[in-house]
Length: 195
Ligand SMILES: [Zn+2]
Image (cartoon, rainbow, N blue to C red; front, side, top):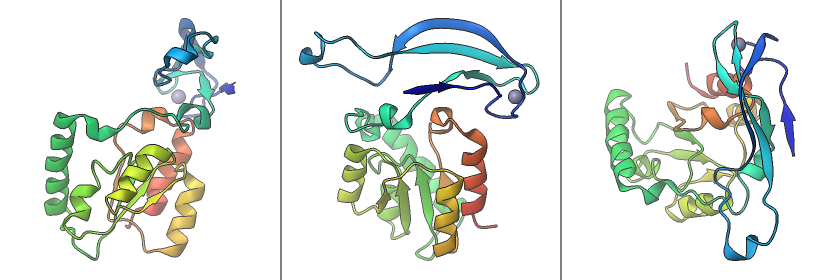
């Protein structure tokens, strides 16, 4: 259900030093109901390591994304009014600075319930959400935002680029820190983005 890394998630160096062990802990977003309380909760090692070559502080264990972002994933971005307002203003800035219109494409990775892309969609700017979590993705689709229910990475970026001209803007809010393969993820952004 999890793997441990030997090399740095960013630079690949083997010079990873363990700096903090927090023991075995339950997953942050795995909220329990009353009926779960009689069962033993799933726990995973949480070990923090430091790369002495590139200075990235990172956790060693990678829990399978299907476990982290499964059917019962409880987080819907639109629950937070201050965040929704921040994103609305951010979208307005992007429309202006990137001169987005109905010929543009705005892609969001981890688009959740459409809290961000709706700002573009409402202005007639084409959007594509990418998010594997069923509940939030269904909420986004209800708003009319096409949502690809997949995990983003280099492979998916190649597939998307083969069938379209590329994205004018790619948004990734609070997602990179949840990604195991940082290099593949960033390479995918480079592939999918127009020059
Ligand atoms: Zn490193």
